[in-house]
Amino acid sequence: MPDFIFAYHGGKTPETPEEGAEVMAAWQAWFGAMGDAVVIPGNPVGLSKTVSATGVADDGGANPLSGYTVVRAADIGAATDMAKGCPMVMSGNGTVEVAEIIEM
Image (cartoon, rainbow, N blue to C red; front, top):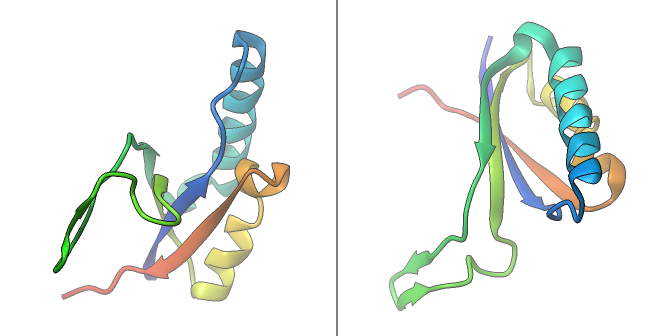
């Protein structure tokens, strides 16, 4: 069964400790619902730089990466269905890019 990367874009930093606890609980519930499909839970990421042939941009580009997860699914359709439950997607604060990890 192939692995897929969930590349998170967007989201927002919780404004209070209570909101932070709610956000963390939502992520834990989502990961729990996916069970063994979660291969690497991943992490949020910090500010990024985008490297191109013309130089380095400090802002991560138009849609900077905010985190990642690796899941195992039968196909990209199944992985996409899992991504629909992401707390960032459910709240309207972000998106999830889903791509198969190709074994080399």
